[in-house]
Image 1 (cartoon, one colour):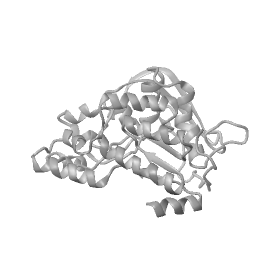
Image 2: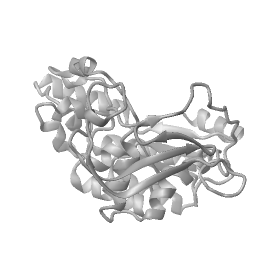
Image 3: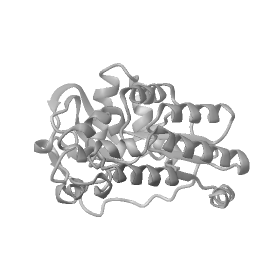
Image 4: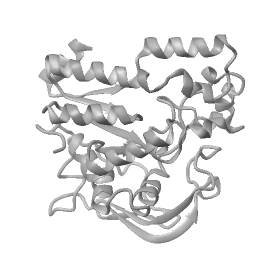
Length: 295
């Protein structure tokens, strides 16, 4: 990994890391199985926060050793937020994201009878960690929120009914992300509206070399626009999902705010429940990472 990071630094690239110490994770899983702890809650117990924190520490040390750009994906722990913040304070080129499900759900979901729906890696944490993630998002130590979508069918998910380690990890979440982040973040006062816009648009565009063509409404930029009603109230679930997935991780969640229209390059492609985008209209964008990620 040192060699990879150094090679990416020379090439102008970025190392994205799923931060879990594999030895600790494998040992924890085998221990839980050996003592008969096979239900979903033990997925989380088998990979406690230190499994993630140790990996983050090692990756940050690699940046100290050889330089380069590090992106910690789907961060879940409060200690991880602190480690990333401290590294950035040192001037290291380290950033992090979290995922919608870590901001909305906690480990208690794994205690439900259908807890296999919320098996993901790293696992869901407790409410304290969740609050720390929101704080990291509010103050900029976490720079974006992604879905880490894993749209497994219910049939495939049920492989883990008898043993958590056999369950495919992850849940569907591309479509709900935007509405959930506004509803749980802005509407509940956890993050500001400007921070929300940075998180869903400006920061991802800058980080991945799309700015200023994307992520802003400056003259000359693509007219990618979402018209959003911040006052709409509705319940999210399978009945109003447009995903081909046959189950919904956010079934029954009350939402404040709803997307009304979406424009891509100035063209109306979503109008309420109607999709007008034609297959093949996408354009490949050649990109180069910026000299600096996010201030």
